Image (cartoon, rainbow, N blue to C red; front, side, top):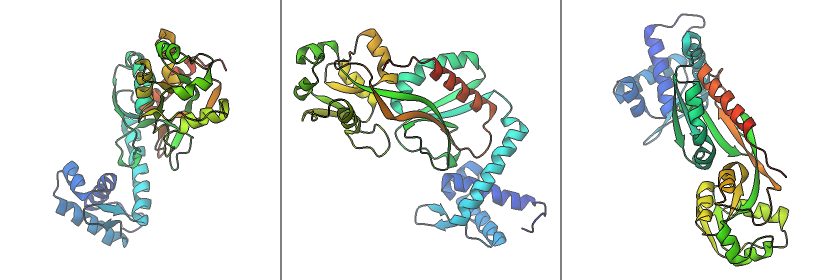
Length: 310
């Protein structure tokens, strides 16, 4: 492709085919989206590679993987495509859909109870909420905004801190009475502890409890009896039903504390978590207006969230 020369229809089709194939990491899935055969997709990519003099994909047994040159060109194309979409109206309208990915616990306990307010304020925006502990591939273009709990390190992505978090053990009032836990941390050794084994990416299964013990009760060890979950809200639910003592996150368990279903047997939220909640997006181009509106609205909701008394 000579520099400065206008693209032919065939060259544009080849570039668009490459963009779709790179998003999916699959010629077969690209073929489905483009209503082509996998062979036609492969031929278009081969013609593009020949015209550029570059190998864009590694052809593996059951998948294709971008080469370093392919990754570089994909990022440039995706950025241009996002900018074009915004320029022709995709970024200026508050109507349309937004796909949000959130960790299950923050989605269940904090985000979902607030969504009616967003729907009332932006009735022409449709939200598609997806939850899970898996990593989000923004390159595939299937997620607009993610709500994560982590240390703020999101290489290659743009992020904004939403709110901090604080930790303290929680259990049901009945469980606290049964084990004599009120203001008696040493009694924890006779109880069952509830672990969120995926509290944040790559953490140890007992990371939150270890953190609390190191900061608040270094003389204690963890009890031998435990139940393990992969979600903080499930730990809290188990605690509500008298299964043991969970490590409570202030932003998640406050409604259950207010209702009396949970209590703080060893005092309030004195320990600040090293993790926080972040809004994350690709950062490749300016956010469409509807996504920016959601981001700003979530920040406003976080500012309205009561902060704990330390």
